[in-house]
Length: 446
Image 1 (cartoon, one colour):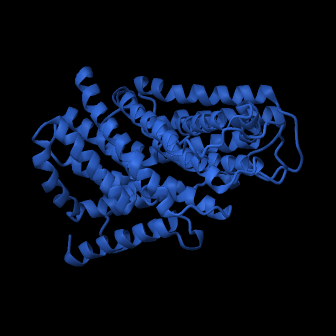
Image 2: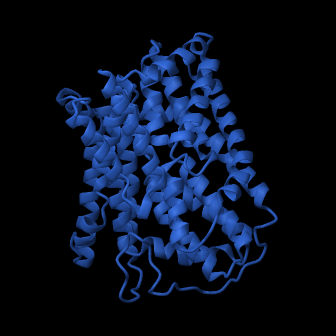
């Protein structure tokens, strides 16, 4: 790579990261990445061969994530999430503490069954609406809003299906979904549980002991951002609810089963979308217009373009300095390799966001000359750093940036200081527990 190309690549990367975090005027995240990738392609930094290879790596993961988002849009269109918002207050039975744990459970399940960005888009407006209905003061809203966002984002670690970067990197290190879940589920869950308990302890005095308990119906003017505003209130179609939820659960399980038969994950995901659209049409005669218009198709372009930029950065030799620092630690054994990989991704993610960081980290560990087992351990530690450690600052993950943007549109101000006063206490402990658990658990397994 020529000198000017090296500096151009580095400049494109820095500029792209700045725009991803800043997002002036709510600019779509695919615009700066696409412009940056286009510039690298035009100037010859990324060749035709590189582009074909990159497309093969990212397309399946991007389609899978996009399909899960489409499923959430379909569920939203039949009123599922609105029904959840109505019933959560009722199920809390006048207890603010019970409501807190219900919200935590909701955020966890939304990420497990969909993905972290989609979970933030779904749950944040629900939590805001619940807080508004209950007329909570700002200090009473914080436990629900901050805890919900942290749990929703961290919960992308356990199964590998809930994060775009995780899925792309999974293919790069040659780890299948079943192996990932076997090695990662327990360590990451211990970290998430510890963060959740610490969050409750931190906010225990702010969570209202008693809240209003009365039958609630949200006004027709309140709806999720992905949903077309409802014109009138309709009765719940329980048959449609049950069938659609069953499809989501079966498709989620199908991802793991498909691995055993060599069926691509994207094929399973697309099947789920087609089934849900067919069931909805059969029951409501509603077509696909809302899905077509509300689906964030730009995710395909975003995944491709961000990978072009990071791949160019890797070929420019930027990752070599990180390899030089990490190699002596990797040679000291699995424990030091796990610790170094997790800490490296935590630092990188909080400096330049976790999406490019996890790709940089994956390039680094694949070039360390590790055995397959060590490579998998380093990758999993990377994921813990990028999914849990990245929560230290609001710029660490794309999901938290989306969360901050949603809060701003609802005129709710949570400062960086307020956010980091919480995260700098709970996140390091959760990360350490996860990394230590990963080392111990893999010793038991292997």
